[in-house]
Length: 211
Image (cartoon, rainbow, N blue to C red; front, side, top):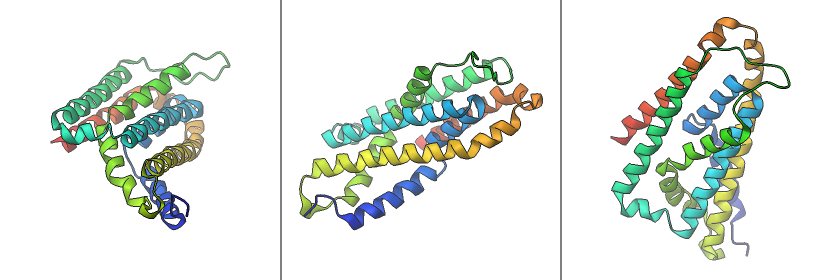
């Protein structure tokens, strides 16, 4: 008997697809990156978040995420650190000079490594993800199949890969909108402020949920 139940696994795939599409910090950040800095930036942001999801999964499989359940103080500390990081990103967006997107091959912009790091850090500093994996993944394990750690890791890795695929679809979906906006100077004069407002709204939303 395979460790994972095929029927449960198909249900899991459908659930992950819906969860990845549901509005949240991760996919809103990917869409914002795509609109402000282009398709490649959006894809790299999605990759950074997928890497962070894989690390969360590894921690959950090894039992490290149980620390957050045992220590509410640590959970809140990491959560508020994540909110502070979002506020920092919002401040940086508000402070950025207004400019239209550069279309030349030598156009300057944030490096791919920086985009990946920022996205990964944003997801890593969300302890709700660690708690979510502890609560969500076991629902789709097959006790009769044994190898529980393997099942949890396989499900978690599937979650990260499928989320990355959904992020890529979102990037491709919003790319035509960015192409339409290129050349409309009025939008790009406000683009950095709009990005900052979105990031600030996400931070305030998470702050309200923390209470």
